[in-house]
Amino acid sequence: MSLLVIGSVAFDAIETPFGKTDKIVGGAATFASLAASYFFNDIKIVAVVGDDFPQSEIEDLQKHHINTEGLQIKQGEKSFFWSGKYHNDMNTRDTLVTELNVLGTFDPIIPDSYQDCEYLMLGNLSPQVQQTVIKRLTKRPKLIVMDTMNFWMDIALDELLATIKLVDVITINDAEARQLSGEFSLVKAARKILTMGPKYVIIKKGEHGALLFHEDKIFSAPALPLAEVFDPTGAGDTFAGGFIGYLAKVGSINFDSMKNAIIYGSALASFCVEKFGTEKLRNLSQEEITARVQEFVSLSTFEI
Amino acid sequence: MSLLVIGSVAFDAIETPFGKTDKIVGGAATFASLAASYFFNDIKIVAVVGDDFPQSEIEDLQKHHINTEGLQIKQGEKSFFWSGKYHNDMNTRDTLVTELNVLGTFDPIIPDSYQDCEYLMLGNLSPQVQQTVIKRLTKRPKLIVMDTMNFWMDIALDELLATIKLVDVITINDAEARQLSGEFSLVKAARKILTMGPKYVIIKKGEHGALLFHEDKIFSAPALPLAEVFDPTGAGDTFAGGFIGYLAKVGSINFDSMKNAIIYGSALASFCVEKFGTEKLRNLSQEEITARVQEFVSLSTFEI
Image (cartoon, rainbow over all chains, first blue to last red):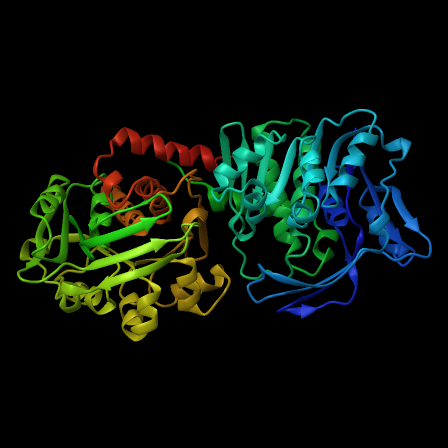
């Protein structure tokens, strides 16, 4: 019973009002699998890097119980690279560089040993690649969670809709939910997206928390109010990884377990933004996570 | 032991994507006192109108246990009038007309029978007028709640700061909290505002709920996700009125009672936006309010 994570494993160069990095390790699959590793220890990734990707970084993933058999290393090619600069509000950013490199021709090959996958996290990637992964699994996973972004709505809407039809949970931010549904009200947007296939829709609202929609039920999760957001890169992937990692751990899939999964995912994301890239995600303790989750409890509890 | 509400009693003309009104009754004190009337039945208002304000509307306030002895009626003058048009997102609006009329020279006279006031709601008005009310009360109320807006930060910052120093609770929206504090992070903004005088800071985030700050404690209240926001006018005043009305009812002032007060205030505000102006606020039942508050409970409850 494993959790399969697909997505990019890549380099980022980030500039925020707090500082600037050279190329550091990033990518949706990196953030998501690291986050999930705090809950679950049978994680497998399918991704692709070039021969510029340091072996030590791969070993670091392995130390987090992340199986990298499905991580393709393309000799003579370069890893995906993204560079961006955040504005003062940390909610908006400019993309400075996007070099697809190995990601441009990524064929997600699933090792045989991965076919026991029960939980599938489709990190942000082209919807065609996401769909290929689903089709290559001989048995449909118990739970498929998909993350995506506006970029795919702009350039590959039909493929995106075809992939959305196949998943159980979609995570999407508020602007993207509006774009995908054509509805401004997030309630109407979520209702429309629920008719597209997924049984659960999670709308991520950044500093305003997240909304979970299922049938006619809604759960509103707070975000931890932070004095400082150092680097938001990867927060959404971390949220998704923590979310599915927690579900894989508890093994039950229903509205109540998803509520808790959102709180755990949000807790992991709140750590992620405290440092550049994956730095903070590499050395968390269970005590820190438990204490952070308790902050979410005190933050949102009232007795009426 | 009464609740004194000051603010405008006025006319609004509103245009939203759903429709358009002629002059209808609005004003911060109208919304706030109507909202408070569902919790508490000793409410007094201090406000001013012209002789164009219908007697039937004054009688309607009285039917809600609102004492209008302090409502001045200026013969030969006109009531405050505001006209605005909401954009499709309902979060932004253009002011089309602002006619101060009687509000331009408003001298808030406190009737002797109002001097028993224990709870004071300073609805959005010039900070000078707000401060005059505090000074004219022979005994400081047990709780002073103040609402304000960016307009006063732009044109009367010193007077605003002097008034803020005198109150217990300030309610302010997120953009205004940022403007007032010069901090982008709402945590930092609230901490700074807490040093300006108030013991409690409430940051209203519209469709994203509200944050309550007190000492080093934070409470995050959800907003009810609504399929349709018909008219947001007065939602903030309604929130403030429901908030202080609930506190006056329960009679205890602490972080826990304020949390509940925020939920009740949010519930009232969620009704307010369902129809134009004060329409929905005039005929609510206690059953409707209880059911709405229960929606907030289910919306935000999780068991970890």
